[in-house]
Image 1 (cartoon, rainbow, N blue to C red):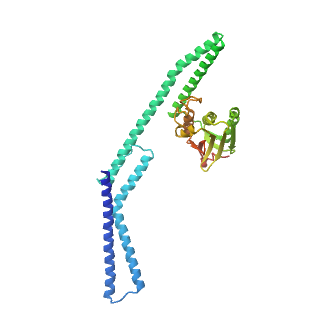
Image 2: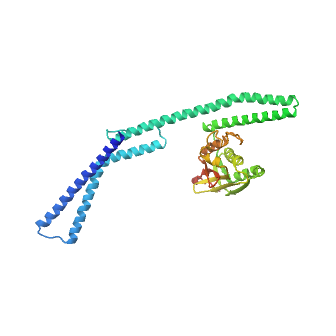
Image 3: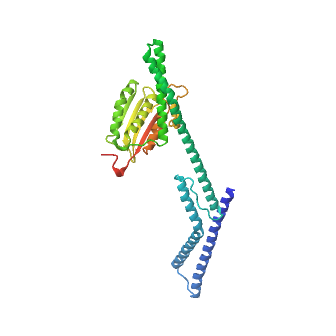
Length: 364
């Protein structure tokens, strides 16, 4: 069906071209005949230069006639194509559900109907996905609240048990494991609540102009002993006095998540490089380290919620929410957090912040 419609449109276009070519040819013959009759009536022979100029003039006028005729015949069609192109751009920009006016019964009208159907389908799918997202967020919220009560009771009984009796070494060991696992569950619930707030836009950022260079240096100083204890060599290249508009507390959370991720997944004895520089249109905060082929193979899923590279074996501590939270915070800052392979088994995480030139927010 679609092929036949496009075939008819092609035939129509060829017909317009042939019609205007015929009109232009007739105009060429008429002008050539008129010039010939002029010289015959005056019983003169034109000079070669005059003949060439006359031929070129007639040819030029013939081309103009063809172009004008083609434009007049295609004007309505071109106007429809331009209109459809503009409407499709609006739909692609996020105005889902937008419909175009359909006139006539030609192939372009059929295309307009297809655009309207596509727009309605996209709106339906978007609303369906948004409803599913709201359901997931509500599920996270309900689970967090429902699990908080029994965990609070467990925590209370643990404290009561610790205060009311002296434990043997075996009991103390079992108690410590139970206490640790309870703390992990409480931390996971906190993370789930944070994810729910971030993805439902319940977090209000308190942005102010801040020195990201100084903040990065302070975080490296604070987390340096952890890297040294784990045997990592950290190379730091921070361009001084770079300023951005950001929520400092949320930004600290992003950077701590990325640095903690490097502590968990970087290969032993491999270099860790932290770079902060200003590029053409943004400030780039980048952390690179050597990692395993398994991690590189999963690079497209690292920001998925609850995804963990070693989830099946449980070798690496964590809940799989850190990178997802970090990316969402970056999106709220109108920035971007990406991960990419950088040769060999090297992985880089880059947080980029847009530079607002007009406000002089990037430098003092």
